[in-house]
Length: 463
Image (tube, rainbow, N blue to C red; front, side, top):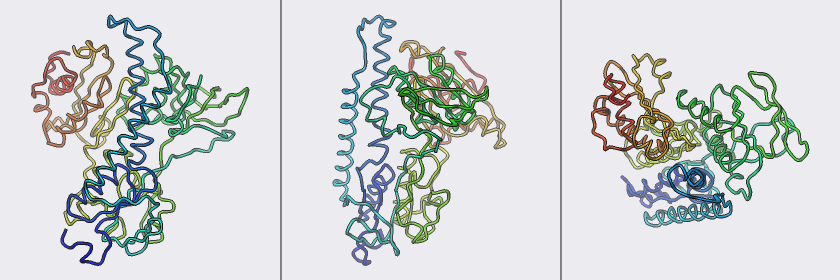
């Protein structure tokens, strides 16, 4: 930091508006670099991810995983009787974990000397920030405003659930229609399905999880359909009406109109940048389709003002927001750092799980690469059989000319944990040969990555 805020006439070197995974990480990184840092948050530290997103959903999904293991205990030679979910205790466990992690973020703020103001933040001219009844003059401002739930107007549908509502459920509905088959929609659809709800999913795109590798998405679609979930793709809800205490929806599908009746409807059509009321356009911050426009340094159109996370559009992922936060903070403090989106992984916490990084096979071919693909099925993996989860595969997409790993896509057991190996390999510019010849312990699930890499080289051992 070339000049302190006090010496330059500012109240702070960096003011961060928003305390989610983009904002609080940016604040910590700025403080590490010696900046006098203030964080303004109107709700709870941790943002959507920690309070009503990533963490609480994964806590509940793990409860569902334990439930499924208990129900299938006999196949492992274990007796378990009268297995059923206790929704109240599931919710309490979720709330306790969220509270603990929110408290932990608060501790990190104190540890790093960051002043936290509990108020709504608004950007003013000349990099001033209105925080409640205070006006803070900032040398740099980082906007980490997050996103809000998107809504679609459906004629006749007067009420519906959102993901926030689902995280506070007191009882399990008999039936539910989930509108939208992105990660949020599919995770909640899976959760309710395993808790005993009759679930129907309606997705307007040709496949569930539209941004995911088509083979992985198709595998999950088949798995859930086989398990009794009804899924419509290339479909839309045209209208709704209330009848006999339930919702009756008219759904247009490739096979013609369908009538679907359900007790509850979950709207899961995504989230949109939370740019309303933040004073952005008044001070000249450029927007595009509600999202803040930034360059590869996370700079907005206003000098000294940066933006990170969901509010800049693109992938709505906590880990992407955190990396953007680090980049913005480092540039605020005089470094020259660019954001690299090539190796941002994605994960879907259904069963089977899905995880992905880099280009899909289709994207690689469209980009002009001479593509070679390696695959390995979990059905042939000893550890997968041992844990009773043999569904799915690992797929490695490679440039045939140089052996560059272009993408890795997985569907199967614990792949949301396995994907990090692929991220590190791609970040380190490892070749497919280096990945395939790296010795993996046996028996483990990561062996599937090694085997898929070997398959891409034409050297498959176990397939």
